[in-house]
Length: 110
Image (cartoon, rainbow, N blue to C red):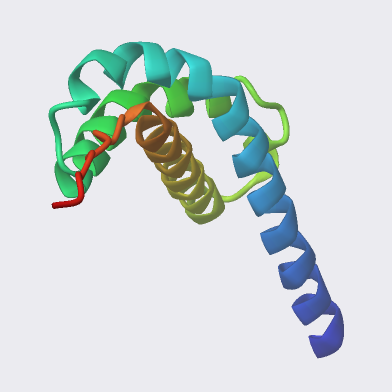
């Protein structure tokens, strides 16, 4: 019985990560539209907080529409929301880094 519980917990954690990844992928375009204009002027920590505040409602709405989430306990739903938020933040920060243009320094020999 104990082994069965351990296996179920491991399977659920993998399943939660998969649901969170899918949710973050579905919301990433809408999140990017909300945050893209202001991210270019922010450092990483500030951008992380800004994305988290703007993405929370979108992630919560998307998860509330998912029928798999309704079968989860409140604690698991909270974990799923936090995991989806973290993945969404990572997606947006990677996208921000692709937009940063590094100036090319031309040096001339003396």
